[in-house]
Each structure stands twice: as structure tokens, then as C-alpha cells.
Image (cartoon, rainbow, N blue to C red; front, side, top):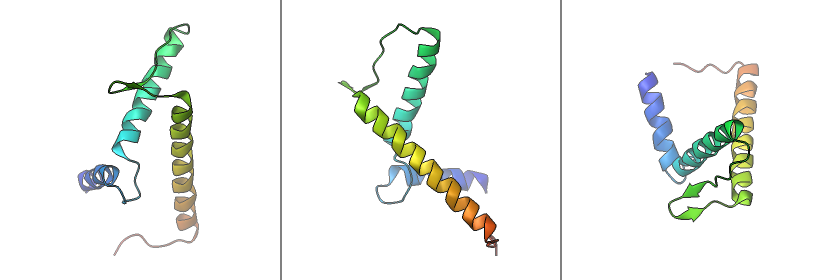
Length: 91
């Protein structure tokens, strides 16, 4: 059952109108997180996030992080509202 849920989430990431976070955004979020971890070790290093042969501008990175925050916040609030209304999830 858990494997099917993971496969559905990945399928939702690659589709264009499924409501999930796009796979490219997940990839860029992981690249951004890796870069931030690198900056903790090497604070003076200048390492841009590169996608293919293009450097990702800072404004795009901030937009991506903002989108992810709003997406997760909406997911959490929606889940809490469903839990507060005691909607049955099975059967």
C-alpha cells in the first residue's frame, strides 16, 4: 500500500495538471538544499545552482522556495481541517 502511494506521488510530480509539485521543482529544491549545506561548511564559496547549462537566478530560487512553503502550508492546513472535521478516510 505504501509503495502505491509513493508511486502515485511520483506520478503526480511528473504530470502537468495533477496538483503535485513538479519533478523539476523537487530536483531544484534538493540542489538548493545541497548548496546550502555546502555553504555551512564553506561560507565564502560561490556556487550557483546550475540546471543544464543555465545558472538559476536568485529571484527564481526565492520563488521556488516560496512556492514550496505555500504548498506545504496549504497541505498541512488542509490535513488539519480534515482531521478536525473527523472525516472518515477508509471504506
